[in-house]
Amino acid sequence: MLAACTGAADIPPTPDLTSLQLEFENPTAELDETKAGETLREMPDLHQLAAGFRAAGFTTDGVNDADDEASSSAGNRFRIQGSIRVTLRCPGELDVPAFGSNGTVNLTLGVQENLIKRGIAMTATDCVLRGNVLGMPVRVAIDGPMYMDLGRDLGLRQRWSGRLLMLIAGRIEIGGLMLENLAARWTSDQLEYLFRLPGDEKSWVIAVVTADGNVSVKSKGATYGCSDGQACGEL
Image (tube, rainbow, N blue to C red):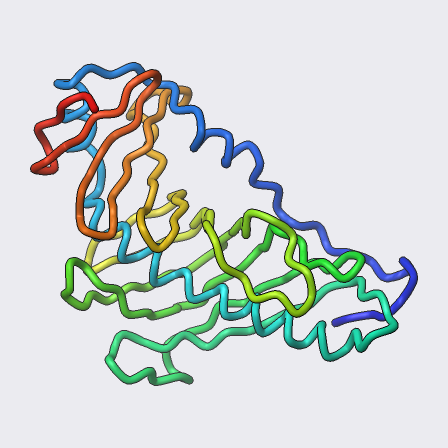
């Protein structure tokens, strides 16, 4: 739904992930080299996580589709305000996408003064995707609520690019690994995963996995490179 108007249309509530963004910038757990390795071993496999989140990033296609729709409605004279609802069909896990039988993701976007709001609420329904773990294909399935932060409001006729933050509040399955309530943000070069220490919700670290497979752990005041995925040294 869109409205060309001067401010009368309602803008749907959009998720505010500012506090989550700040948590990525400010890990609170204090680690040494030994504890960094132990903490890394408590995490899910980071390469699988990266594959799952990057596959889920196909939802930005819905943002670009919505931008196209809003742009065509705006013309050159109108201000656009209201909401856009987009349903994405999930492509499945095969080399060739098979749309229609692999679930959906529904997105609700807010538009204000010709800007798509940066926070977007989504719901996945039995969505099946294809991930890539170090060159090997893996099945990814998502079900339940999801939220993402584009990093900025998006002007009409702009294509989204940049760093994406996503919170999967529902369930994600990555090659048989079943997880829920995960947060990560990523670019084409690296993915950051927010890991809360078991039993202490106020202590967390940021695990980083690069596109070429290097792993590090950011704690309060120190970053540790973990060359073999377990033994860590301060950078």
